[in-house]
Length: 149
Image (cartoon, rainbow, N blue to C red; front, side, top):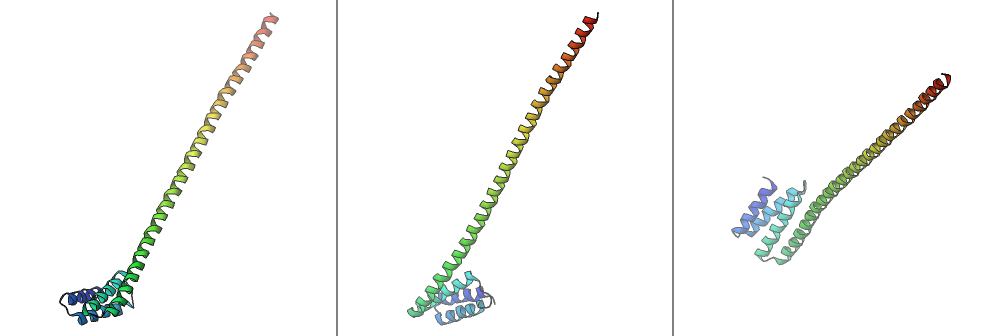
C-alpha cells in the first residue's frame, strides 16, 4: 500500500474511534516516508497523529505531533511560495530582458532610419551641386561660343 492509503486508513480509524489503530497506521506511513519523503503526505501524517493522540487523551504526544505538523506544513508552504516567487522573478527578468532587447531593436531601427534619411539628403545635395556645376560648365561653353562668333 502507499503512504497515502495508510494515512487514509488512519483517518478512518479516528472516525470510528479506534485511536491506537489509527496511530499505528500513521506511524507506518511516517516510517515509509523516511525512504522517500513527500512533504504534503508527511505533514498530513503528523496532523493525523496529533488528532489521534488528542482524541485518546495523550495531550503531551498530541502537542509534540501538532508542533511537528505545523513545522512541516510551514516548511512545505514556504518551499512552494519560494518556488513560486522564484518562477515569477524568472518571468519578470525574462520579460524585462525581452523589453530591453525590443527597445534596443527600436533604437537601432531609428538610428538606421536617421542614417538613411541623412544619406538621402546628402544625395539630393550632391545632385544639386553636380547640376549647378554642369550648368556653369554649359553656360561657360555657351559664352565661349558666343565670344568666338
